[in-house]
Image (cartoon, rainbow, N blue to C red; front, side, top):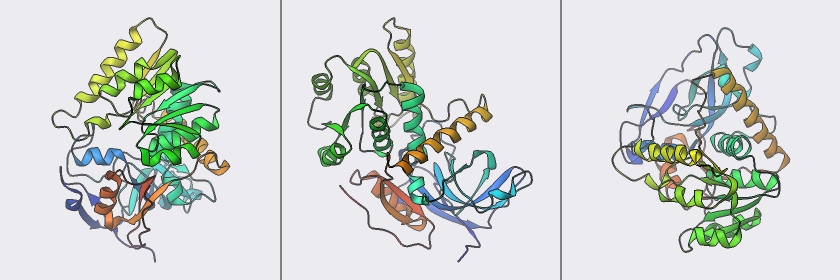
Length: 354
């Protein structure tokens, strides 16, 4: 039955998951150039875990509705939008606002989901897929036969990244806790246990000449080690500071330190390159170019899914009304894949742990 009211999750401050609030109201109307999307799947990403702690470097002031991305069906369209878009399943990257039954978007920010791709499956590949694709193909650009190191290879971005890399003919070394090693081996990844092994020493054993690229979401000391593991001409792509998730103090400082190191390393005359990847980079300068690139790259990720090069790993599906449980599960480190939130009238699936 079609919902007749808006339900959204509100993050009121730095609170425990159980203190997230619900707000109800009328379904919004689409303005000029806008669409209203009936959410079918949204997810719990690392960004929301940081936002809950007030640690995401450019989060809005409290209170706000979290939700970094979503997939849903276009319910209505405003003036200036092609009427054929109504009824189509679309995906969107929104940064905030996705944890709601209905979301208003600029139509230009919506990317059509191919026929035959389910909402929850597509959801696992929106922010994770676009991040992995752009870091691998637009930043690192490692030639077939090269070797890369992926930190957190079992995580949301890491899982997609290693599969895209294997499809591109790359050798992959991936860090993860031991419980995930068998799954990584099945993907063709050489696993390294970051808890029990000396990661830099082990990577040097596996790649004595250095690796062609490192993808580092950990931040802190890990970024320095990652830079030192690069082969001549190699590329470091830093895309987070997970190590500082539970720290106190300035939420900008960990990122600013990485940016400072990136600037310094790129000034060195050694042929190596470093980037701090932000999926939103370039949007403020050229919105049309940003949208075109995002649409093209996310479409490539969906095609990779259809070809079987990438699998959609759903850790659990929980109704929006069980968002506290979903966040606890995502933060537990015990699940493989992405925790997906679905409309509140649907029942939960059991989580798949590994």
